[in-house]
Length: 523
Image (cartoon, rainbow, N blue to C red; front, side, top):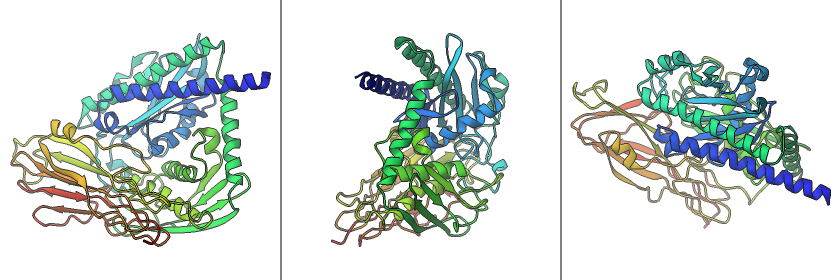
């Protein structure tokens, strides 16, 4: 009876911890300035023990942020040992290789205290609209061109902001108010979470998180291992072709199911690109683990324990493990395709249980205007906005694929009203791309069709950095048809084929059709 009571209390505390990080994420949603965070939910929030192990994550957020952040906190603690931190400190970096994969994401870490005793950490991250450099494009050939790099440092010290850091940011980004606002939103959400955690421990008469943390990590690890043991043992291989930038990209994976874990090896994948579509190893790890978990144990909480059961290897300086200073801005072009590749590996041992391929990586429409755009007049309105284009998911063995659903990122589309209110752009259409889903017993999900024009007599630019699956469709499974490839044109008829930045002339319109998901089974 005592054991059952102890287990019940631990489960209640675990659930309370999840509620704390969910509130942390919602504070960020309410306080963020950037629409990609505020409207699309491109963020993450989590709580860590004093060893830097992630104990719980918010449901709100993306796997690319959460799973990279799971390991990012350890890098902070190597540079700022826990005993040197004090209440009011906030650490920050946007290091692509020790954060979330590119410079546009800031990771913040805040120590939590109870009566001056360190009890854990809260971390959060979000995507900022701009970090200087070339902007959200893939044309850069090194990370030095992509924007401002902020090494691990204190953004707040004993509650006082690092005004030197904010001054450097203000003078190096195109949207200084949004960037500062997002960073302060990260500070706020962590600070609220530290207060909630301290109150929770006091309510239950606890002095620290250590015992609960060990229970969470060990329980999740063993539950994940138990799920792995139910799978067939062996190694399965899959490959996938993507459009790439200067050349097509081939991704190769060998997935091995062992007694106590799963290993994914990307040997044979294409070498790193000269341009900014490379996926740093931390981002590759994040989406690989997510893909495995979706198939093997979707119901097990995501934390340091469950993540420990999946390991990843990749050749150095490959497209999935680029070395510094490779360009990485559009890393999700590759990274968000990896769960689909993991699914392909599982198709043989789990026949009849794995969905068809989907569109994979979402399309980020980086739209800007002003005198800097070729052909614009000096009085053209300056703007720098992002819209999200979402393709279709692959059909499931017993259900159609979901249309315009961002898998695996999980982000939402930014409402057109938000983009129209902050720029002179007008969305003429945002609708399903009819017939884009692959045919089969179960239909693939349809992508979105978006048509945009400027209300001014002025050109605007579109960065196609993240647009893939325009030559390589999402493949059907079990005899299902492939999804339709994506397509980007101007209303005047010109095709925009690559990942470069293009100019939409005054009076013309941009038409972007997202790729559809593959179908499942023969009709």
